[in-house]
Image (cartoon, rainbow, N blue to C red):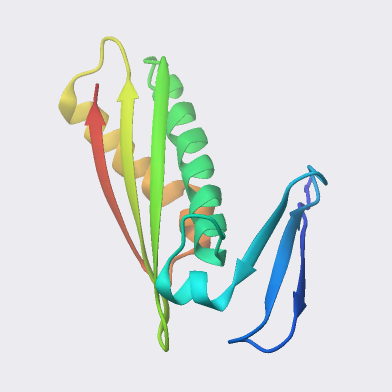
Length: 141
């Protein structure tokens, strides 16, 4: 069964002077501000499309990695993933760097790295992002 997820953005004004809000349809209470300045210069208080894409990539990778570890017979206690998505004004989104730390009892480093890389390739969000560079830095905690 296919599942469709939605988010809605309302934008007011021009690209450079305007601003908007993104609402995740799963939690109507979450309304996130967005604007060009945050996207092109960075911000600690205003979100960006790249931050939202990073959240999707981190969540998807953590789920794919957890599943692959479980299928290997070594279920994880914990997987923590940060996705750093880079945006270059005038070029677009150029990369996503996955920084992963996982607690997986009874797993050797070589197998951990193989499964981590496989999850990077097979995560559905990674597959959707084939037009950019995706790198992985994974550590067994």
